[in-house]
Image (cartoon, rainbow, N blue to C red):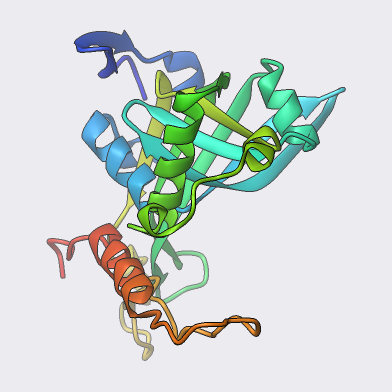
Length: 242
């Protein structure tokens, strides 16, 4: 992202963090790079899944993981028996990416057809959260995925906490790339008798399905409403060209 300057919070202080241009500079379509930290936060807050890549014994692996942002860190969690989690907990460098797909760009040629999206990449190493910090991390993850759910559930048991690793990746080195434009067709194709434009895509909750062993007559309305509100908050604003 060039030699841009971002900010990260340490305690109550705000410190400057110069991004490592050799690793996070966007080289392909650099005009789509966004360098302000507020946009990074917004992209991470809109995402539910991060793809986390790490190299273990010379073999690269990339796996999808639930994620959430808490302040200036990206939270991940998984089983203590997970090879990926153990590798990350051991200090292996990682690359985490999130992508929010906002639309299909339907052009007058296959070559110019594309997607509109918001994406972020975070580089770093993970730190294990323990004790109250780990519990706060689990709360943040739960309420990001299903807003308001934590307060309706029983506390995690000691056994559950012992079986779960909660990791935090500092938002110190990152890049953000956003594509939100209309088709960019070759002028020679403009007279083609086909439709061109953008078809927006959004994630919306569908009809809930009761668990087969549900024992109480309880409504899923609050869960569905919370998910719908999250989807609405995460939706992109209408582009200025539309």
